[in-house]
Image (cartoon, rainbow, N blue to C red; front, top):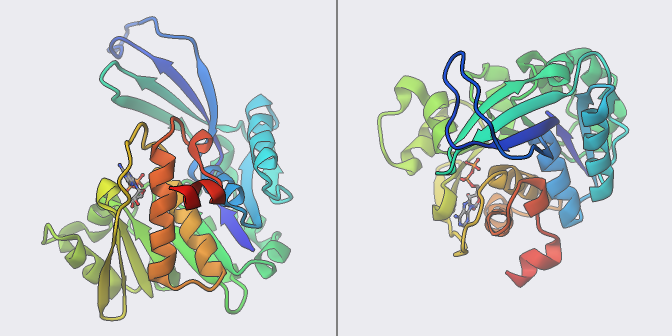
Length: 296
Ligand code: ADP
């Protein structure tokens, strides 16, 4: 089974002609509210593919929290680990201008209250999980506690988003660490001396992870472990909206690893899932079933 530990946000989206400056008010389109957050997205993506999936997260005791719980349940995610209360549900206030550029303000809310003690209290979920997948939209000390709570033989997958310098204990546990180009550059910092993603993967591997995956958008991805770095071919599709593609990729990869696939096999499947996700609008609304991936 797959356990996702991470964030759940309500995405509040308004289209605007231009963004307001300080002290200014602009009028926008009708409000659209979508379930989001990297943890919630990953859990929905995996469950829609057919993975037995549980989510450990925290939402507020409010309408947005109920929206998020409903979307998880509709996808078939086990929500016994979704804790309620402590702060309002996390929200992302998103304005989109006519060129498609986003400006986003995130209030972490309840995501920021997902505590190490919540992880310790979820021991039974950890024992039932072969793979545990996490991101960084919850406190870093909570992610450290996830690493310490892994059941023997289970695998830890981390997408360090938003990127932060990571403690060695977390880096060492990653199998794989999954980064896009921006995340790779932030984690590498001064060590980012090359333009070649193959070099980023090698330098990231030297920082401790057992394996590394670099996602490259329409260019596909590459996987690295031991001394080997290999390309994962991309799938040619007409991209409509890339929102949430990385979350779908990570969820699919984590699920396939749990079924015994090699890293290269799992990444090739994940690239198909990511490609399918960009052919439709939205994040969770764009995620494919296994049959849709096979038909691609
Ligand atoms: P993120 O959303 O985290 O920035 P990427 O944009 O790298 O991540 O996308 C994740 C994966 O989704 C890619 O590795 C690729 O397999 C797939 N993908 C993303 N964009 C496209 C695209 N335009 N065409 C085909 N596949 C894509």
